[in-house]
Length: 73
Image (tube, rainbow, N blue to C red; front, side, top):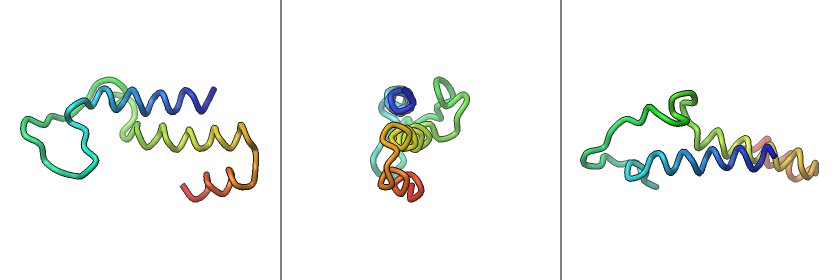
């Protein structure tokens, strides 16, 4: 459940960003600051969703490898 919810937050955030999202850091014409959706409560919701998803993976599998992955992230 943690894994599903956290990755859902990351996907929702990407949808909210729409055309403002880019894989590279760049200034895009007509770019605007997003202050609604998950950005209203969390400063970096995509990163938060991914890190919580990795934490959820550790809780699901409980292996040493998943713990090491969580610590590295």
